[in-house]
Image (cartoon, rainbow, N blue to C red; front, side):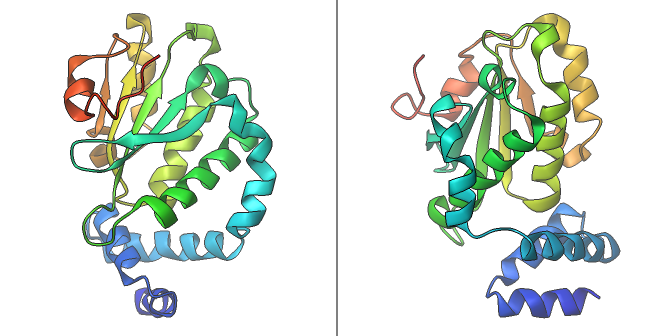
Amino acid sequence: PLTEQLQRQRDRKDLTQVLRFLQGSGWSVEEATDALTRYVEWRNNLPDHADLRKDVEVLFRSGAIYWHGRDVFLRPVLVIRTLELAKMSQDRALQLVVYWLEFGVDKLMVPGKVEQWVVVVDLTGVSASAIPVTTLKTVMSFLQKNYRARLGKAVVVSLPWMLQMMVSVVKGFIKKTTAEKIDTYAEKNPRPLRELIPRGQLEEK
């Protein structure tokens, strides 16, 4: 079971991935084994990076998802602009997420030093009725399942007060340990975000 998955990961020269799954599963061997089995199956069916790029390159200019700068702990920052994300189908949004996360794991991590990222979800310009709740839930669930222990912090900005309940609903679909990493703010550029991401690294809009 887990030892077989461990061997597969050893063949991939990525034993730390197994540790991330154990950590993300609350150190439950049974849960980690099940999650890792599904993860290996998903990885085996994942196109290589060049093919992934061909599938989503047309979406780059949308500015829906992209990397921008690093926080005070040198973790790379992934920006999700919900206004643009809402214009995509759920499948296309997920393809774009996969491409950029694979890019981040391959190019932006420093093994043993920087192995997590920060996600900033920007709700600027999105009305309550237009927020793609299903897509956001799918993306967060996908992150939790296939990129265990990678999320350092998620910050949601420009959140209308009437949508606070909706955020609580979304949090209900993810693990408690992950939900505790998600902070929400009504402001577009709240002080905690400015303290987390240096001014020179924080995008101005």
